[in-house]
Length: 85
Picture (tube, rainbow, N blue to C red):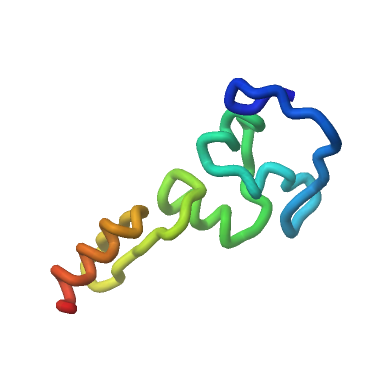
């Protein structure tokens, strides 16, 4: 198998909570390369992908403003600017 231009050999086991979720441990960009028809294995992961369009954490949804974002530094700046601190 080739991942990100590198040949990967050896056994690849199932990692994750559901059968067939071997790609769950990969970063989002590699999931697409390894399994183009990626379907999250758990309800929480499906909900996150439906809400934000991708499987990536952290993901903040502020119920007070409706603001949603992914990146940690961006989340910290937003929280400080919006709620102080």
